[in-house]
Image (tube, rainbow, N blue to C red; front, side, top):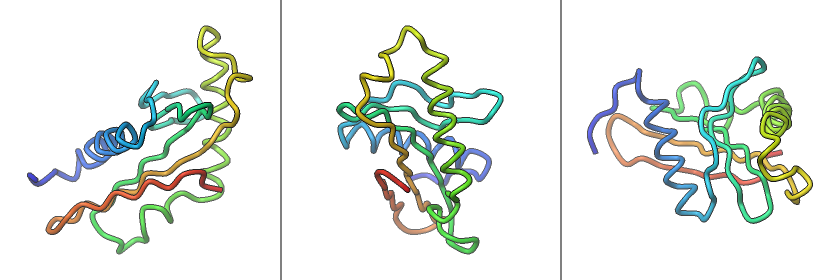
Length: 125
């Protein structure tokens, strides 16, 4: 696998995360959605659940793991963003059609040498 420049690591990781989610059976319906309150990396549907996905890509764990970067404050903001995303799409499936709104994290470790490790954590609390 070719070396990925640091400036492009986030976009590279988001693409790998999207591929992993599709392999896991999720249907991606939006990417890099932004509003005044922040950004959602990936919005997907998993059965009857709306899934907001945060993608964290790291070269090393020197500053903590990618999963550690998703703090309780970040999770709370992602839940608010999920509601904002739903409100911005009145033509989309009505919120009551979703059994739940879930936050998943895809943590990717992409060291300069060695294999890439992708960890999809469902339903982060």
